[in-house]
Image (cartoon, rainbow, N blue to C red):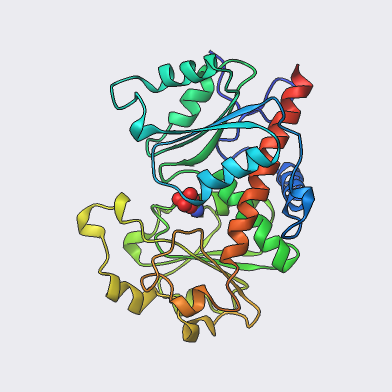
Length: 321
Ligand code: CP
């Protein structure tokens, strides 16, 4: 059996399961395409026919608001048919295997699967078994990857900062459980970010071998000092053993981003959060809703980024056939 590759034999992108292996040129191409779709509110360029004839299925086994909705909107705005299968209400619950679920939908001419799953490896496993014309895109896998989130975060930073090379980006909080942090690190490192910092308590820091090149800080004040971008992460209680779940008040006292603490960053720093937010735990409401927050722009960019990825995969497929 051939080793798995996200690329087809012509070098075109067929699946998007991880940002690992995507070089800076390809990332920039995807970001440029996403910027085209980002447009302005009310801009009719937000609609197209690039996916006419395609059927996209969203298969989410974990909760989602932003990712699932934005994949659905992205596909609809490009002319695709879309099905959203709630995996907890599907025949998976009756014991049907993941592959039988995929083959069933493939028989209905689904040709793009977007999968969110808590089990590492499921997305690649599906990609290894689908028909040659079919693409698989990760909508978030365990604590490992969330490639379209990494892209939309890079797009947002680029929109506000104009580049990556001279930036100090601080990723703060529950890094060890965060697929968002891993994909942001991968994207920003590939794009040549100036300095990437990880900030948080020892028990929420990833193993030393992960996040190569990142600098680590245990205090928020040091970690965001003169930062250009402060990316706050959600405390992921659902991925923690009980012993590791931090007390919310104590956590906020040490790591909650308040307006006062944000003054340690550069005056023009932007504040990001992938959502969903725990207000009063990792971020104060007046910061989340304040003038430096770009959190809602991240959400808007999520649709544009997913339009870019879906249309790019469709274009690569047309070149193959
Ligand atoms: N950022 C993100 O993945 O949000 P959802 O879990 O709501 O999709």
